[in-house]
Image (tube, rainbow, N blue to C red; front, side):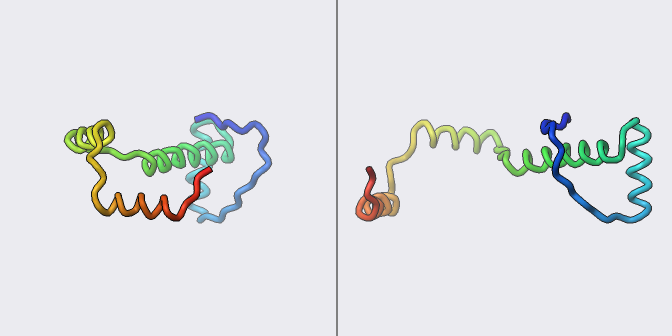
Length: 95
């Protein structure tokens, strides 16, 4: 993953064990990169995966069909929703 920001003005400081530092240096060397470049690209890749995993909802086919049907042909509002809508209308002035 390419770094999209061209101006690098932010810093992150971290402490790690000597073993972890050596392993990261070894991995960066194997890829012919600087330690900073290796750490940034690895962190960004994992950040993207983490965010994607938390922003995506996977549904079983049956659930996906049920969800789509609810969107395209919603059921009529029940009593609680109707009461909430009436309360909203009573309290909120829209302009």
